Image 1: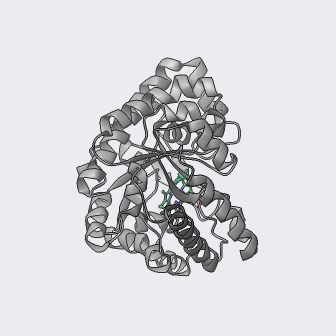
Image 2: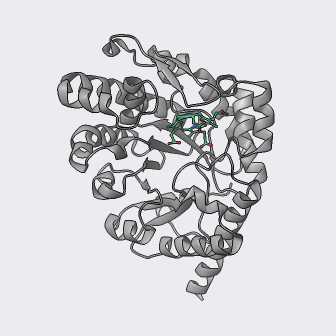
Length: 344
Ligand code: CP3
């Protein structure tokens, strides 16, 4: 088992910087497109053999140091009582009940057994760690309240400000669901988990602290002692100090903040994950190599516990596969060279 990724999460020394890519299984891969011609997205997620196959596709192609379970953050919302559609264009659409306080907590073994089956297949196949994941409660709440992606998230913020009792009740319910869902994934065999908080970055720092942080903190406390927890907040660069208070082992950062600045602000005690702009994969190789080198170097600063290289958000469907390969190979090559130079 290649455990470089887990070592970096725990802050142990590694010979090189481990790397994986958010959305590494997906539409930029021709073999994924080929499966999608035969099956819709939900069928891929709900059929363990297919979900396992899609998880393995990028592992075969790229020399990544971790695999991430193929699923979607919206999957556990269905058994809570929300109808979900993934139309071919335009992002997911949700149909929650009129009274969203009536949503049910899920029982993972009964309600999402296909996810746990997928994990069991994968841990037998993989010789790198498998990352499980969940949407964080606030991001899930925004999908429920807005029913699709939104521009200014006014419905979510009005619920927060005008009926905060109801907001907190739903956050509580979602937090318990997220915790139980992640615990079931850990029991099935994932070796790390990532909480995706894609939309928490729309909040002011003080609202993040008041309305989101206590729930994430509680989830992470309940998971502690199991496996490393990565907490990724898209657009979270303005309140990294609060994000750190979540207690996560690894803080994921997007590209809007310089990695060196992020590391200075996080201070000690955590590892960091990130943060190449997914669009930078369209740079010519020479310039891309410079950007990668800069991030690898900054990630090696002694003040930070560890660095896992990643993109600042998901890889784009238009990305040439060769560029993804170039990225992974470059991270390995640059970091191995710099680390051995440091020792000798
Ligand atoms: O990272 C991985 O490779 C694992 C799989 C994964 C997917 N979605 C597959 C997917 C993960 C971890 C996610 C998380 C997810 N899903 C997030 C959080 C991370 C992020 O990207 O911010 C969010 C917000 C979603 C919700 C979602 N799912 C949206 C907005 C969309 C449509 C937009 C898009 O990129 O197509 C999806 C669909 C989706 N999830 C696809 C994939 C591969 C595309 C489905 C297809 O058409 O084949």
